[in-house]
Image: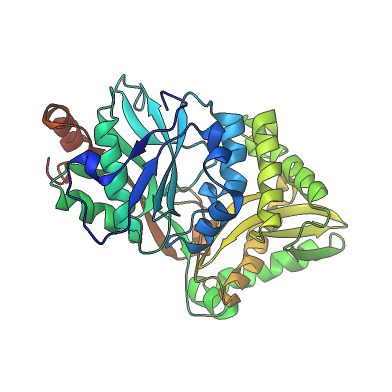
Length: 389
């Protein structure tokens, strides 16, 4: 944030009367580089495992490595809430002078190009308390910010529901300013039954033919791993495979920049250490032709990154690997998997038929004048569907 010093907010500061029997809540916003002075590794990891809505992109092993490479301590704070001394919520927060190219100062969930979920980590049952304290803190520490912009959250999740209840209860203008539906895997069916329901018999026959023809090219082998064994080599193979394809041609491959290359490698090692990584490989004569990394964050999972060898595109190796990925349906600890893909993705939506609606939200902060300035902008951006505007 603007200062590297620790900023705290308690209920009394926002003008609310503290409940006599409610546990004391304290929200702090230190600069992210000082997080070790305020957060221990066990409590951050414990928060992730107790969160009512999982978000691996906000877990310690991926967020800190991202901040180290894509942020500066003058821009980003780790806002966190404690209730009776217990860590109950955490979110990276930034001050920005620009809003999608317009010179509009605001507070926002900090993010980067490979952060596909922007929801905070909040202990189950503490969602409303987290939003109350965060919004109260933002009112007091708004500075020049006109509003609070919150990153991608699940529209049907407990965090979005709690936010709407808190904002409505406070008469605070807010609204959804972006919404998209991405492919989701969620079903009571087993892998084969799901595939039969999702694809026509003709298409399934074509995929069997492609698998057979691909196997005629050499020794075809599938591998699924959840440990750190030979992970460094796997990461290098993935980076090379991705860079050899269309992402490399348009300059968006992870290996195109040292920062994204290093972040990807460190994140996968961190995920493996936490038991959060599942990696799938389809190899031909020992060389990967399709690869996929999943983050396992019960009760959900996140299909983080995938790549395939375009020289074998006629055999659809990426799709064949996704058929193996349907085994997620058999995991007792996974109820759903977020594709992390753009809406209307041409490959994954041929297989995964459910949808996960994700939203970005703007919320009023500060006093009456600031909110009056914010309302017309919110009405325009939310197409008249804003609350309290």
